[in-house]
Length: 122
Image (cartoon, rainbow, N blue to C red; front, side, top):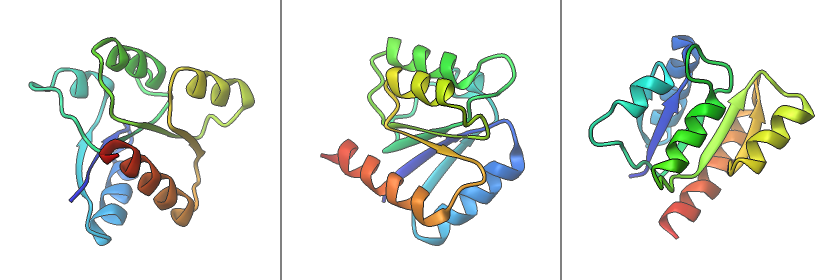
C-alpha cells in the first residue's frame, strides 16, 4: 500500500489526515516539523508528501528546497491556510505537484493524492 508522509506542526491536522488516509487503506508517517523529516535516517521515500507552508523553524518552502537538494523525487502536495496567489505560485514553481487550501474538500485531496501516487509509481 502507498505511504503518505504528513508534515504539519499542528497535531490535530496530522491526526485528521492520518485517520482519513487510514480509513481508505493508506499507510502514513507523520512528522511534527520539517526538521523531524530531514533528520530521519534514512530519509523516507513515500509515494507522496503533504506539507504545510507555515511551520516553525523550517517552513514548507525551505523543506521543499532541502528535499529537492537531496534529489528527493517524492511528489509534494502543499495543504495550507496560506492560500494567496503568491504562495500558490511559489509552491508550484518550486516543484510542488499540487497546492490545496485549508479547509479542504476530502474528495479533492484524495483525488490529488491518487494522481501523485500514480506519478510516483509510474
